[in-house]
Image 1: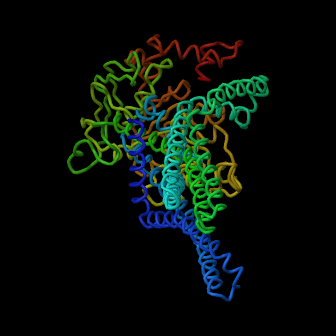
Image 2 (image 1 turned 180 degrees about the horizontal axis):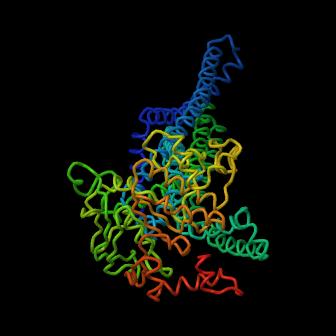
Image 3 (image 1 turned 180 degrees about the vertical axis):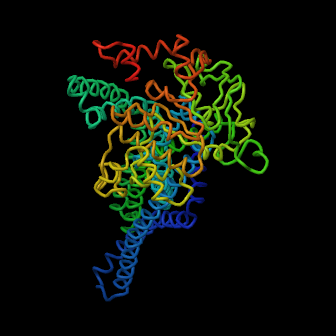
Length: 625
């Protein structure tokens, strides 16, 4: 019963979506469904009338009253055939357009739900990211889109109406035969629905296997992995793993045909065949006219076609309904995860008096934080100060909590205890989007937007008119202006070779472009600059350029630098060392080296990597690091 309730609720949800997406298209689809179902039934009656007049026409000719009647019914039959064709075409077009609107509406709803929470925890938490991925990926293939319901439900309803109408026509010939057709057809439709629902459930139950197959296929066919695949001889390994996994998946999918569904189809076919034989016998004995026999025979065949149409669209309908349910589960999971959390559209509390954004010293006051599902905290009673208008570098081993500090400062997560203040104002009381407009960041895994070079930099402040002079200035300071101007269409070149006239950038060029985007944001109001491994993908010359211009780039900004490159770190005004979620050392580069603690040890180890063995290690390190 719970399955049937879910099915009914799914149809109700689809009906509401369809009406909201396009009431006119919904009405047109519903009307043409009725026409598509009723016209074949009417055609069966008309053909029966023509057949019934055939004997009189043969005896009296077309000019007789019977002939004229036969011609009139033939014209009606032609008109009904035209109605069937036109109604089917209009229904298909209207349902397709309605489906596209439904999908677009759901995509916007998913985007809104995913973007609404202030933080990104729901995107990184495995409990919700799995559902979000399913909701997102199903829109890539037309077979599973919820919008397909507009077409499949139309076909399903048409088949059911045709079956019901055919049973009425057959019952007029003999009530028991009509009842038998209705019972057998309904049983077949039910069993096909159960089988389709089970197959749809298997598809989503095996979605992890499907994703692994897609991943293996991508490794074997994408240019990104081609070098490693060849150098390590992975081609055969990938093909074997793909084949093994595919065979395992198919063993689950290809199961014996459901016995009850087969039995139902056999019974329905037997009802139709026996009914046709009975009609033929009675017509031969003269117990029914040729016209009656023709109507009943066509009604039986039309009813059988209705059953087949329902079965044909059943699997597609169940897949689309399952997708819609998974989509709603994703929305509900995001809402549950972000329950009582601040949203991107409204602040948690009133902004500071006057509506001014807080500026000045940033303080982490006894901040503790652990990720959902983690067994140990990342930060424990962290006290940290970012001086106003000065630069702070954070160093530490992997997992020390450096990137977590950035996420908390950017309001991607909220502290579990303690607070973050800006010039004494609790950051939790500030509108998150408004605060983020004050922050510019270069992340280590910065997004590579496949837009034009101009747009990619201007996205640093999309809410202001495009400032070409500012774009060029930011690109020049980031050291990427000459490279962008040298592209095929200069600033208008799409930054992807997948687009006509586009071009790809190297990892270092992308990182410099990300720096240019951040500097563009700084030029238009941001005064907190975050640099997360800014030299990770830069060559020696570009890194040296960043090193020499570090003070210029960060002048007057509250800057946080995270880096394993001490050539960048040492230029910061203040350096802190994290360990165990706490600050264990603090000072300038010279002070920390003189202290001889963890910073000094890390600096010494890195300096030795670049020092010439024939030179004095300490002196060379001082130059290269």
